[in-house]
Image (cartoon, rainbow, N blue to C red; front, side):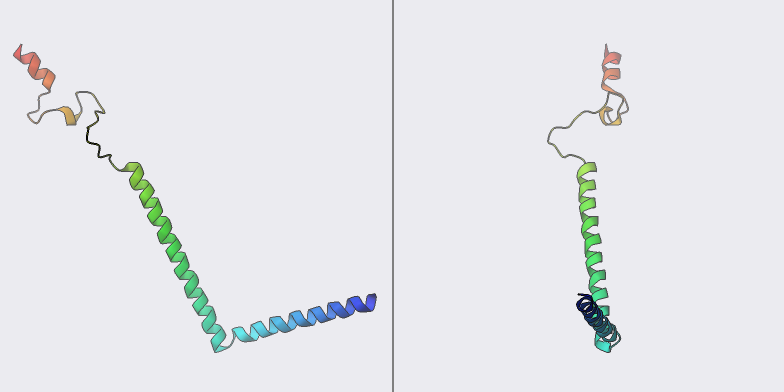
Length: 101
């Protein structure tokens, strides 16, 4: 049992070292360096696309949240003192009606 175990452990370590050595040797060749640079460029492009997608989604959410509503009927939000309800001549409708009486 002991000899079989150590034989399998040695064979596994040898195969592992051979694979790691082959990968390390391939990384230092011209083709390996080119492949790694292409993978880096692909990763950067994918990251840029993800950021652009997230940015567009965030902008759409913000536009939806803060955009004015374009309903056909205007909504009153304040009292008579709000600038949208004061006529252009500067007098409110209540002041003009009281002055005419």
